[in-house]
Amino acid sequence: MNHKIGEAAGVVWKALDVGGPMSMAELTRKSKLPAALLQRALGWLAREDRIRLTHDKTKEVIALHR
Image (cartoon, rainbow, N blue to C red):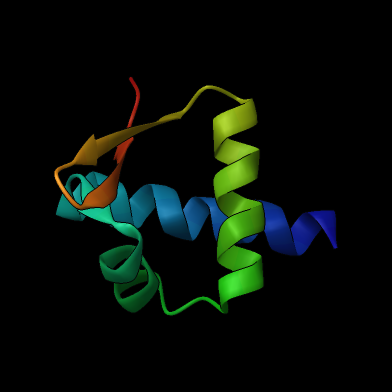
């Protein structure tokens, strides 16, 4: 399972690197990952301090933290 989460984290990283900051809905569409796997990948990246989460009026925005 860790292998799948690591691969999903790579997919999320690439989507954010190419597309820039985006909402969870946008990231779900761009990554094409199942919701549970996407959340695990975000947790992986957050634990490694690779992403940052901010709020933009009505939605949470996910961006790479470099």
